[in-house]
Length: 351
Image (cartoon, rainbow, N blue to C red; front, side):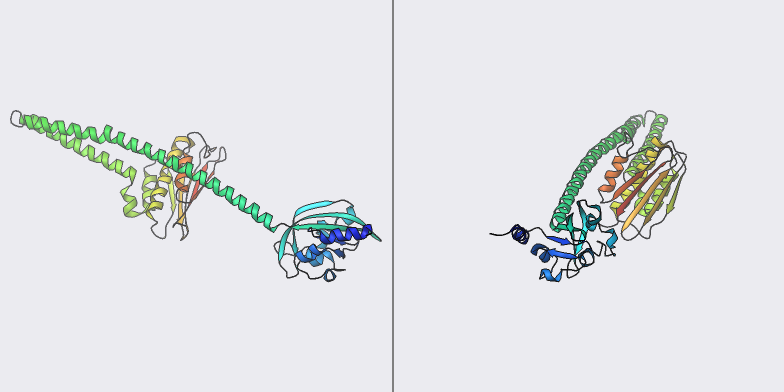
């Protein structure tokens, strides 16, 4: 019949959990087969009487040296308490490293306390956790993208209604009035030439007004200066028309893709509109720069601050949607009483 010691030895030999024992000096005096195999050795004798820390735990994850005095797994020899952690990495025989979950408990030795250490290679678990985090992040990004696309569609419908209303209430009425004036002038041409000339003059005035309104409307959709002279000049003209002083700084090494330029222009336009409506600012600045990878635009004011993407009526959610639709990101810094900075970074090319 096997003794208790033999029975325990058999359990440790068959256990899938890597286990070893260090003596009061930190030397390995026992290692079960699972520990030997996991650490890349062929025989327990290759580990016996070697310093535990210097053999398997002498480097941190980044490769920097790990002092034995800092090792928490050997602490039970002095504290007499069992400890556990999941933030350490072991070094295999071939020098490769792997993350571990570990337990260390004190054990009485002839000349003081040693420690019993058990550990598990958690590489696969960490990979599964990372995959789960990435999946969750992807789902969050997808949900945000769908919400942004929905808001963009809704905003587009609103813009179309506004354009239709502006056409109906503005240029269309001018053109109808002009048509009526022309019809009456035709009837009065032989009967009352002077009245006919007056009506023709009115019609010309209405035609000019309708053209001006159509030009303003078209500029609001896609300003001609943006297409012909580029983003910086278009933003400078936008700043010149603002109701508060706006300084524009920066330059671009080359023309950007059309979608980036258009969205950047309206980003600045909407950001300045928000400043005028909500910030109570005295002045604002627009900074523009780009390299071959990313375009950056920043709108800063000296107003009351306290703005947020979710703030009621702030209009910042629409700006975020516009930037996100191009694969970019937007940050808002707006401490109360210290102004607001809205910064967007947009990839210069897809991917």
